[in-house]
Image (cartoon, rainbow, N blue to C red):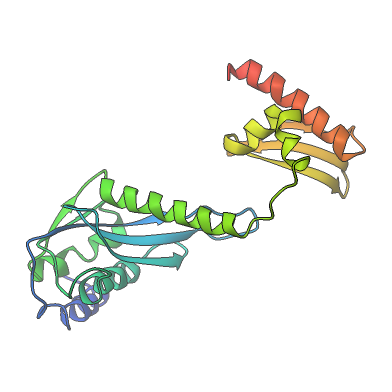
Length: 222
């Protein structure tokens, strides 16, 4: 199969400094997972992860902006081989990936390095490592959280449907918006679920939202 100039360059970069590494009888999983995107963030960030399949040990992780490319995959694998987070520099016997186009460009180079490539639909060790990363992110954010007073903490009892919504259904918007006036909305990943523009205070908006979400949960059988 003829290679493009980019593929030849990638192969040369891969071979340089990698081929001489000890090859261990190990299988690795590698993938890029989309990180949660705040509403104010325009571009999705991804976290590259490489883990061993036998014990789930994290070998490398690397956040990137925008969709992963072949160069992103190359950099991630190079880091895992040359500077693993656990153990000494080495290369694996087998690599499991999902077979996206960006990985496919590295298949020939990996095979030339004696690394068998296996395309899988599921990568359980990567998924577990990504879950741990998200949990650590959440713990870090919570450590900087302003603790509510005892009276403020009672808001979930006053508005249980709103509390249920923001904890697993979607998010809410409350406030004055140009051209709409004072508005309250409940939005999920599919779009607008509830909207009310009759309220004039925060208390009225929350009361309207509570009623609207109770009705929505009833219609949906939630």
